[in-house]
Image 1 (cartoon, helix red, strand yellow):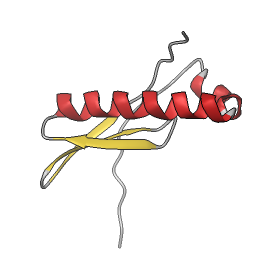
Image 2: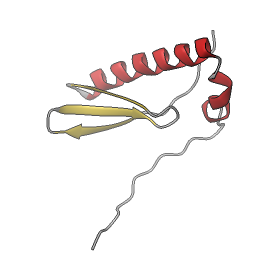
Image 3: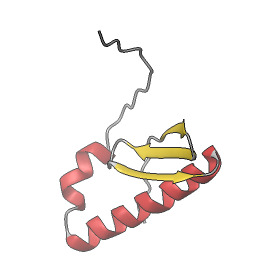
Length: 79
């Protein structure tokens, strides 16, 4: 069994929390940040299992194995 370190981005929306994994593009949601994270973890694991079964896990291996992951926030303006 292989374990990957993933990134989770979680934000509040009107009806709960949305979570997204940038490495895979997989998203999920929940009523709390903790639930959104749990649901995201399950969805990513299913995604990875399916990618392995389809033989395409190697295609995303570089992204999954990236040695450094940096997160930050920034403000963007629109006129």
